[in-house]
Length: 129
Image (cartoon, rainbow, N blue to C red):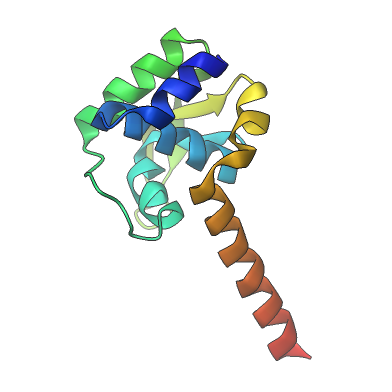
């Protein structure tokens, strides 16, 4: 698994970049995310600094790779939509391999995102005092 992740970090391939970004959002959201939320979540974690467009096709290919590597589980589930009140089918993606969390502790994008969130929380606490 470590070899696979190392390869991703050294790659400029858009599918590989998408795989890494999906792993990042899974880590940020405690190992679980709906497929329909991946695009917005990648942009959020990347804070808009992204050198490719994670298209639905790239996301589909990245999910396939992660499933084949046994890093994630994917299951079709019903999901409620608060804006419409309707239930739709979506894919629930779950991080299956806990080694990913420890391996990606060195990830600079995740470090920057966590620092930003931490600073925002500190600022909010300070403003409420």
